[in-house]
Image (cartoon, rainbow, N blue to C red; front, side, top):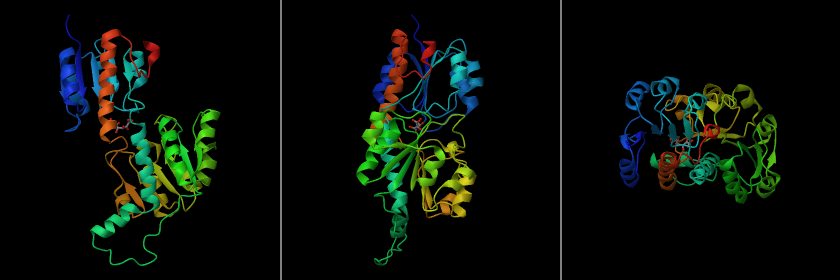
Length: 325
Ligand code: 8YV
């Protein structure tokens, strides 16, 4: 029996690569070194039965170019906004993702960014490195307190809940907005109250975005929403860049509509508005929410497992379009 043909656009740990090599006709492009462009990717995936993908977009032209042979796209991420899932479903191609394994890492970074922007940690770090620390005058780098303040979480899925658990011991008062309310038991455990978006925006000191990017959440936060926020509040985005209209955010910061922001993701990633880099009340990280050893290696292992299981017995864990199984 001929082995299924797999293209992996991902960094793979040695043991996973060896295992996949035995089971499949494997072609690998290490995404750690570079990301293939749309055309390069199309050329590489011709005739493959499965794709493990970290990074680039799996869109209709790519799907058309390998329709008939392609059975499964295994995304090395929990978010699947880089994949045209509806087109895959229409072409009977299964799409899988890597939930859970990165929840703690992303929640940790969310809490880290909140603390960084509230307590001005990167600003202080810059000050020391630039030799501007010349003693400790009393008003040096006063930041914001956390205790008793409202933390508004947009998107109360697994990562939102994990952030709420971390925020409670800091004395933060948890409010959340998501399309569907979580169960009463979870609200009770997290002492979390659902608010509509406008109320959440106007009441929170810290707003952390952790919802998926969909057609409904694109530009969920733009000029009107930023105008509702408190002038002493901070916006933190660890989800997807296009949820926030970046040009409106930059204007809001320039006009002091809000006190600051921390961004791990950008609307036109990896590009970002360079004005942000000149603002001391802005903390910037490079889409590193899941960048811990455990989370990133676990994600790749899970993505490999999803594809191996499919070719072994036709069942797949973590399918995002299980209706076609
Ligand atoms: C990854 C992510 O950085 O899982 C997600 O949705 O955004 C991140 O964990 C990235 O997408 C890796 O492919």
